[in-house]
Image (tube, rainbow, N blue to C red; front, top):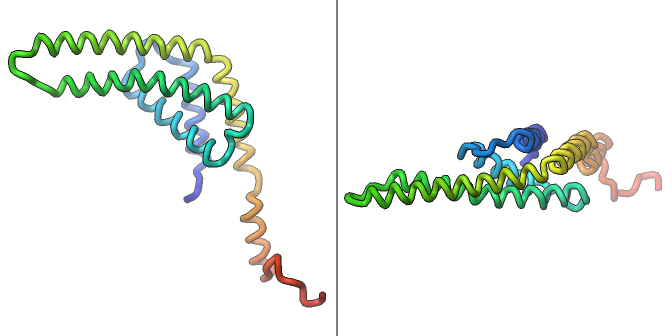
Length: 166
């Protein structure tokens, strides 16, 4: 399967934008998109061994911390959504108290996420920018394997075969 460089570059842009404009109480959809974009980048950097470089390795480490912190907020969003669909007769008081507790806990976790991103904002934006530049270079450089195969098909020979004049 081919790698779509534009989609990956889009994930980098979205993360830069998220780091620049994180509200104190982000919506459940924004948290979900943050986590999915971080997971995409983590897996792609790992698969292409781009996380062996210092900047990318530190970027992935920082993004992992943010993803885990956002995961706590996401878990509370899911629990709140599930609780809203449950209806037990005579237990509405308990359900209301539980919803209030989950809401307060979400606020607390969202505040911790905001604090973490605010603390790492400058470094994160810088590392994302550098990673974006590396990613552009990665896709501009010619693929040596593809180049060799194209050359072989043009000349109708295999590189390990000996020339007829030898």
